Length: 325
Image 1 (cartoon, rainbow, N blue to C red):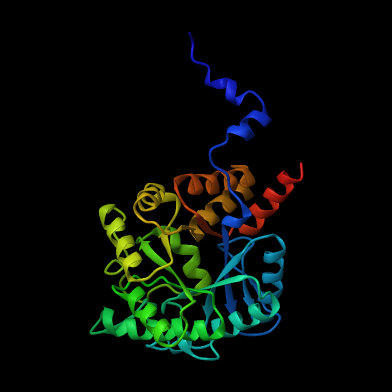
Image 2: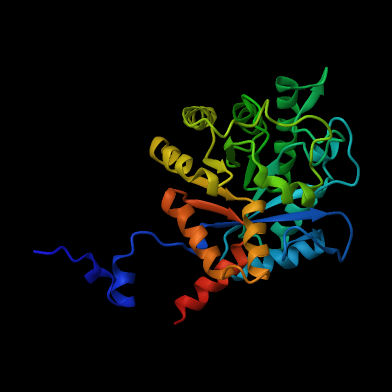
């Protein structure tokens, strides 16, 4: 007898019933860039549809995001001034700290995540403190802990260290516990590879390194076992969510980590992945909406429970429209 798998593909209703994987608006965290000023909504040329927002505009955007059913945002700050220590990153009145407080006042139910790194804030553009031309791991841990604590004090639900210093999850967890912020979560960039897909983000956040590269602390894309080891270390040190970045070149890594850890797994659908779809769509080379949804489905299918994506608002509208049919 001939096997006939096509019987389960015959109609839209049947396909819906047997579908193994689905993308939900509940899966999304929307990344946003926040800057000083008022009434500022500055387009990001390399990321069509994305903006650098002042705090007042960010609160409006957060209300829109929440109205679409998206449960969370992650904040990336652009400081007024940079220095060798990235001091605005941990200032009480820093841009991210202001933004967290404003969002929590406007949309208190929203889950607010904050990027914990120094690259946007340092005059050299590296993710840590420079000593003798090299990023000093342990000195950086002290600064990152101060950054995370300042975000928790402002009201962040989760801090998200993206620096890839050894031991930073434990250092941040210990600081938060000691200072009474036991409920503040940590979304750890556990597996963050050196990647050319970060280019548009570095334009948006003005965070490109002024010398050298980040290969001594971000991971070699050739390594798989190291990714699992990094994820398990962050679990042990007190992370609540484990993240892989970038998403599309690392679908195999997402799957590997998903099978090895018993925490939610997040994936960052990064700026270069977003920008390529937007550019191809604008030129009529692909159907952008369909490519977007296929891309997000592939990330979910690989094992991601949470997806950080600049497509969040667009995808949410597509999902809402389809649900209404």
